[in-house]
Length: 288
Image 1 (cartoon, rainbow, N blue to C red):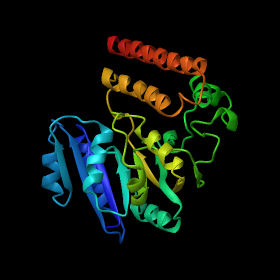
Image 2 (tube, helix red, strand yellow):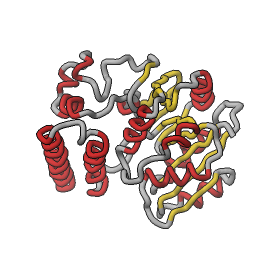
Image 3 (tube, rainbow, N blue to C red):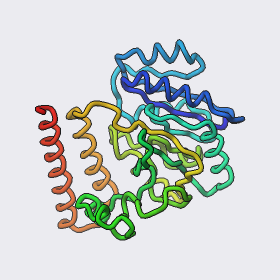
């Protein structure tokens, strides 16, 4: 098996069906499998997929176990030389699978790769090529320096918006919406850290991949549409909470021992201040 494609679903029935349809419309000679892991959806996704695409391997959880654990469940039964994490809210191009696997076959030192992701309006999903969120990089991003100086590398260490989106280069981390990982990498470092319920698990995985000596490449030779944020204006508390908890987890896991207590204190203060501001903004949207 060349490729195992893992799609995690949680009440995104139509998006998931469209995603799987785009995969099976691929023009490729690859031997691949699609694994759908459903996190206890109530919208009939599993039934619809089993009816329309019986060739898809399906796992139905009885509760929402989170993005990391669900992907790990898929990896446990996957048999491909490569594992592709593919969000349910994505649409792949006809040659995406062939292009990315060929690139990995030609570059044996690359542990993971990602392609160009665009939003429905055609703009770049900036999360598809990022640097690690060090305290300094996070400071420049959070306080708008990256927007003030979009072409300056110093102030764009996180989103890397100063780098051309149509060129191939090595990056620190990709986005879990489309992340192609070599089987040997997973055998060596393990799967996603399940302490991350959702958000941050992709950055953590990339950090561990690079620590193990593998390169991570952004390769925009093909494009994937990412229907990011295709939900309501108001985000549930769980999403807001997990987004900010992921920041805290990542810093605690990888950076807390590298910085003094003053820097660590400022980082934690900034994370939870941002969390409270996000909750306030969310509440105002609900009122409006």
